[in-house]
Image (cartoon, rainbow, N blue to C red; front, side, top):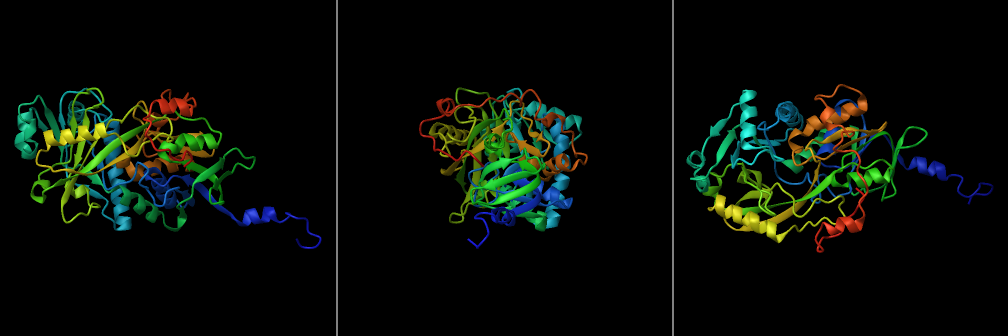
Length: 440
């Protein structure tokens, strides 16, 4: 030590010199985190975005991949109108970045009368499209569907109905997250491989301090927690109440298809009644939505389910990224029945979906200086930049672009979450599950 200077007396200065100061620290670099950074940047608000993965929208999280659906075809007028606003913001983002993020290719809802599901229903969507005077086509029988889509010949003779929105399509998911972070420009500092180990939002000075596993300290006026299935782990680390969220293990795969057949396969969502582990909700994306798959010039379609493998989880400790062979077999059987011209399965994935019991997201403050986005419930991505505008409004006090009442963290469906022990969670998962990090 220097003569006459007490050991450690310069440590506070060292901490301050190694602290990043910003207006907002954002935890999570998926859809909501990058959208919030983008919206804040347009208001001149700085942010530091922390993502524990090695990329934005990393493969372990729900925002990763080539494709997410966008559509006005909802059973809910609220979400249909919200999509219309979101499409305007997507268009602004595309112009700003020069990136083509949305691809219009239409969307067909078809199948049985299931009643309302997490994705709505054929009849519910038809009624909303009619009420809002939105362009669509209705098919009253399985035969009409098969006539319109020869590749779906398996619909013939079945008690199906269908509705199609030609202006629907898919969003290039991972690219969209990267584009929003890029659009945030110099107002947002993105830090990858930055896992949160502490978050203090109860300081006397009103600041929020985040500390990463790398030893970095970020001091901010506000924090946004937007880390999907890791939400409650971060809330717990910040000594804030947890939310009533479920984590679904949701599976999908790519299938080979001849190029001449691929052009005839629509983007579609199939509704059928639940049967044991079969939740009845299946979807297919066309070959134009699988551009990242490169394998000898072949074409691929993406097919998946919109129901969970196993029971809902309360944290990521028992999440199994390999998924269930039985669910993959269900997907294989669906492909053989509905898309017989499609070839063998090429790969498979299992991603986490953070769900609420009422299918409305959480977009709200949980403390004076902490806002949360979570519970996307498999339907959030299509609203993209609009969600960022909503989150930014919580921090700036500006008017939100949509009514946030339904997204309150204080609604009965969200409050009252109790901590679930690891042993309890493990009982609802398979013994083969891989152990994952708890903190985002």
